[in-house]
Length: 400
Image 1 (spheres, rainbow, N blue to C red):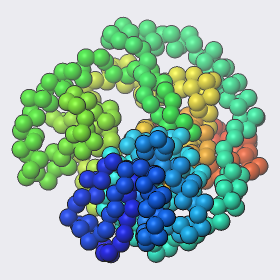
Image 2: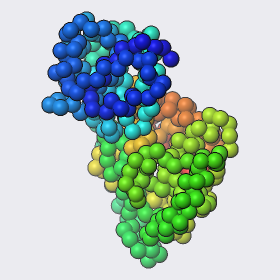
Image 3: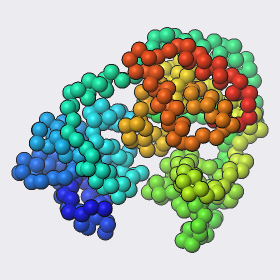
Image 4: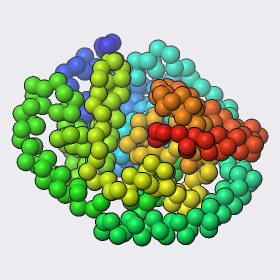
């Protein structure tokens, strides 16, 4: 890592960078944008700017707009930090061509400083007006034919399937108490409530939490010496009050692990070509739940999302919030130019490959579908081909 770089930090979490490995970096901390503009006008040399979104009296966009309006500062990399992921802030940052965007809770300071070194080496001043114009040409707009098709298909399927759905709902209610539906937050072009039929019994979580609590002290001691990734606590959950988790819990033998941390550990295991544990039968899943999961019946309430305009029949799958907040690069976030959908390109490709697909290939297919929404590229018949390919895919084993 380079040394003697001068960073201007605007915000109130400067201790985030107070680590030994950064002792050779000169980091100037200022509390607000007024002090920052005065500091810049004093003709002091700055290599990069790191700015919190929330500032006293305004926000990071206000300061960014002022900096980019001054030609002498156009070459300085600008990094925006947010406390929690917000899709509207992210889209605005993307539109304004901010150099990079990070969520503090899920990003190591070293990653930000490495990014600054990269930007200093390769970033060049841009002609802002031309870039903004090019970006506006790629903004997603739902084609009328697609929206009409979505409404027709969703309403027709719900009407035809309603007698069967009533039977399934009755079976869910008879087997276990609780609501028959399940709601989680997902991110597509915006954050929305994602509907599914409930496949788990209520109350099982509390029992498993009690069992986990009994072993909690043992796990803390074991984590110090064990090589098992399941012994390592989730850093995001550790920052929350006791009993709260950053994402839904999963249960693996005698372990419990949140969905976010399981995904992180699984990716690390894939990078290192190491073996990762397989998920055993979750004791919370009911008999009816297993049936509706295997037949994808639990996905039918997503047709309500389609009618509301949250989703489309065909599109890129909406992501859990903790996954969406990790997609900060231009190429990764391109998938959000397309609507979220019930089925899509990578789902049918995954079935065709027997369920084996890398994260890189999945992202490439998401971006390929997003390209359909550039200018006049959208093809209704392309969507129809994906739907026709989905029908035989549903008859195959496996889940996507």
